[in-house]
Amino acid sequence: MADYAYLAQWKEEINRSPNAIYLTLADALALSIRKGVLQEGDKLPPQRTIAEYLETNLTTVTRAFTEARRRAD
Image (cartoon, rainbow, N blue to C red):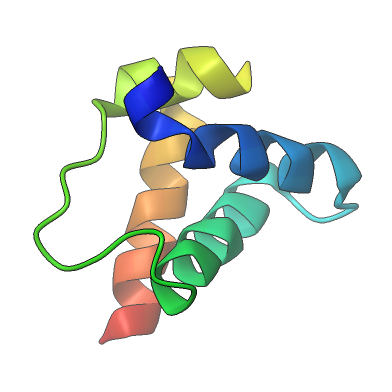
């Protein structure tokens, strides 16, 4: 997971936040983009891999990505 070091930051954000996990994950993704950690064209790991790393389920990660896309429109 060394290639995806930002996942550790996302996990910290989720553990700290009182908000729903999918919303916190969408926020963390947006923050990674704003900070330049993630850039256009970067490939994210499969959603299932993200879910396993973050110790959540695939549906939560899918909801977070859907929310992130909605916000970007």
